[in-house]
Image (cartoon, rainbow, N blue to C red; front, top):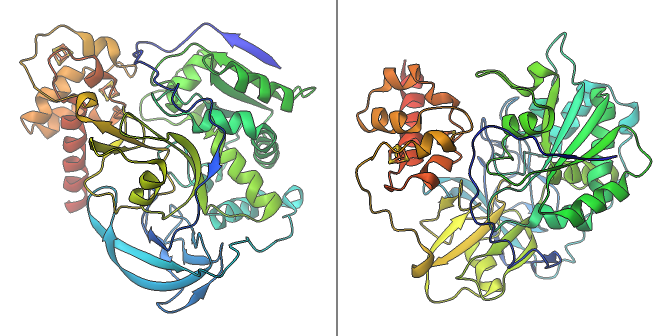
Length: 442
Ligand code: SF4
Ligand code: SF4
């Protein structure tokens, strides 16, 4: 079933899409490299706990580390090879963190050992949740929140509606678009598995209208089904945020401090659905993912399947990194993170690598706030970004909490809209980190 919505969420921004470099490029596979670095912490929650030792031989898909708690997940080897080290290595966030280093076996075929499909239809919900945790799946839209946690339904709660995010509203990124185009059956299969296990009555896939071919492909893949709807949405940032997607699709508000489940909904990304299908049908855990490599600093932009743990440098060299590149961002330009080192690895949550030359970098010359109100108009969470930035700069933490700083999803729309170059989201992000530390030390 296809519907088109003209309604949307409040506010938001319309950054230039800049997707033309890669949107027409079929997904290719990055060749295997010699060495992979897998941080134990590359998801929200507790780090994973090692179960193999330095010197051990591992097969592609073997478990390297088990979950370190319920809000944690499993880490697998992306290649057949040998554990070279378990030691501090560079993380994309700039810190040195405990990580496995795996040396690929140059003579291995790197075929994933064939496993029997899991009989998911016969599973109880608890067993399903455990399997999703074993698969190592996290939200692949960028947040890297362990997927199974969303499926553990508290007593008395029900997921009536499964909501699938196919918006890909960040500029430059097109890997979700290509996935919907090239593997629509896998997305629908993942939806079938999850919705059946959760007991959801209906599933809705939200796709922005700048991807008409993806909408057609998904519609064809679920042809004749009345339990899945594909809905085209007006193009706007940050439509991929859970609360904005729900508002745009159903005109319903998730109240501050509440979750989609409070409205009987669970939101997942399209790549996560394909990951569910890959694990339950083919036994393939999360050992690789699709990413977009683009930007003016890239000679051969691409959509690639990349093993988790591949160094950013290896990916960029494969795509031709121009000498004029001055900045590399992991993720999209709105919410992504500028990298301090190209030796950092691609993580489970990495949706893209963008290389910018001097001319394309937005230099942050900051002027005084002119109280134009653009940031208020941009914030779809209806916060007052200018006030939050001022309080954050002054270190006024209690007032920041009262101003609902924790409702900020760090989407960057306010910073994008600010004519004075005030680094609003940076100030908010830093203050939120200070608040978290303060809570932890109490
Ligand atoms: S970063 Fe936070 S304050 Fe700024 S627009 Fe997004 S939600 Fe609003
Ligand atoms: S957009 Fe920038 S200049 Fe305008 S009110 Fe917000 S912080 Fe001030």
